[in-house]
Image 1 (cartoon, rainbow, N blue to C red):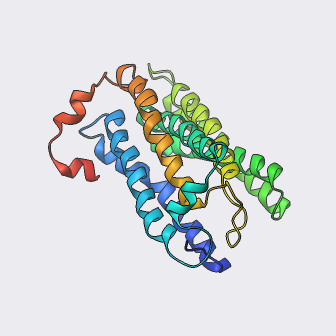
Image 2: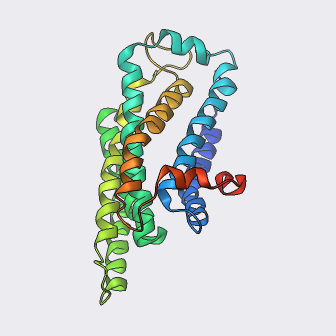
Image 3: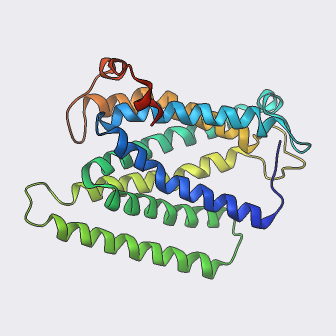
Length: 254
């Protein structure tokens, strides 16, 4: 598999990851001009699986270090597979709640609150499990993110004051999403190898773990997203027939 040894490249990739993580919801806002978010989310779940498979069969099956994708899957133990799969299930519920919160409160409110809280919880839980890095810098950043969440929630509450819709609904859904999202990575991390050059037996490489994670996301979608389709937190009920009624490929590509 392909691994990164340069610190600067690793930081650059983290930066790109954060850009993608912070901007994918824009596609939801574009798509939901015609579709409700549960229908959009089916394409999202399929896209995650397809992209993870693409990386697994290319980057995850090239290079000289570690194990190739198929070889890695064949030696993985049940516990590692279940951990990565569970991570996908938990993340999927959190992400669905986040998308619902965006639909209710708008991206400017839901995303900072949900993702911010997930970042705070994720940093704390992962640092407790693996105390690596400068604790002062990490927790100073956590404090600033927490402050941003509080200020964002206050601003939203004031903006919604006097309106008939309950102003805290979007914030509450965002907070629940953030709590769940803050814990999903511990499952995935526990399933993965820690030494890329000499991978532990039974564990998964990041490429393999991402595929199992994506499978957990997609399969759990038949439970979580079906609930959101027929019992929506906002908007009208939609059905599977509504998804297949869209025949143009353009909306699916968004």
